[in-house]
Length: 109
Image 1 (tube, rainbow, N blue to C red):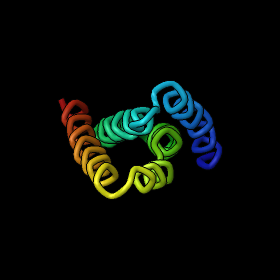
Image 2 (image 1 turned 90 degrees about the vertical axis):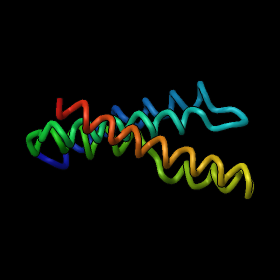
Image 3 (image 1 turned 120 degrees about the horizontal axis):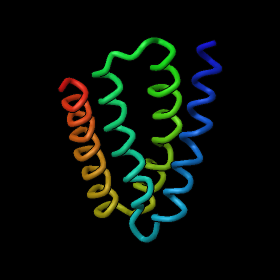
Image 4 (image 1 turned 30 degrees about the vertical axis):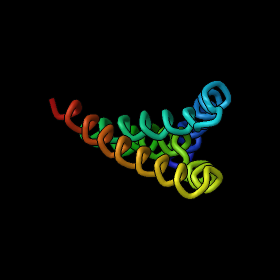
């Protein structure tokens, strides 16, 4: 049952990320940035809520795993060059970690 829940969550999360990327990405990869930050917030929230194993598989591993992307982030960071890529990477990591902490805090409230 768990692999099916993960696949179902990813089947929703990945198209959502694709839509963000195709609508928002330009010279600066806003769609990937938004997906990674929003997914980090949601994962922090879901973690704080201590979901059941099935809900965690569907929402945390499945949806958030399909919605966020490390591979696109890495390729886009490299493609931006040394200075802009470093700025993009630092901004993404700092904001995503902050969003995760905020999600955790909201979930604990």
